[in-house]
Image 1 (cartoon, rainbow, N blue to C red):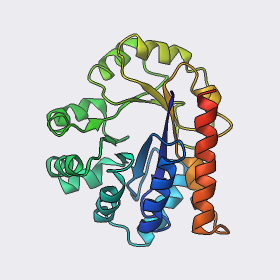
Image 2 (spheres, rainbow, N blue to C red):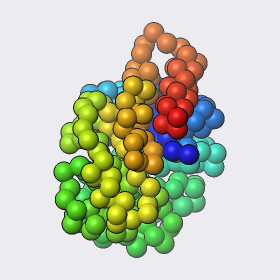
Image 3 (cartoon, helix red, strand yellow):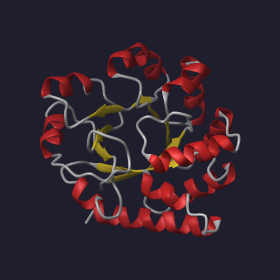
Length: 246
């Protein structure tokens, strides 16, 4: 069974909504949930997620709110934190990873923490049984892939194209998937530009997909009630889960 990972922006439109949506997604095909930590300069995210980040921060969301939401979600849905390194570093990585372990948060996805720098935190991740998700891009050569995936855990985030999330560009991912799988047994999940239309194609050869902008687009629709947003997101999740496993 191929996996579906869903990204949602924590605290947008509000904290209680995030909890309700996360739990509903967990009942509608989502295997793992990326709780996005809003940040003022989300360099790897496209305009959709960037806008949701901005609106959440504008409403006063703090990192402590992410912890509150995580405490409610993690016992029921496999939960990871997706965010930029600065807020994590400011909290203190050792204390944060201990907190993650206590809550049951299983991993962190930090797009602006390079592989070369991430090694400094390997031991503290390991001792707390939290995975630091590895990124691989199609532009990485085989030697680079071998080095990057050597200590990978939980899953490898394959960036579906060089760019920002939500752009929907397409490319042949089979060579890089083959390269990754020749060096590790860690599952490979494809992210960036994955939605209902592209999921079936992008998952070929991989073990799952990561979907973000498709859900956040719904959250940004002002004409929908909270319940309608949850229902629409769950419908998208169910459709994608079915397509990647057909």
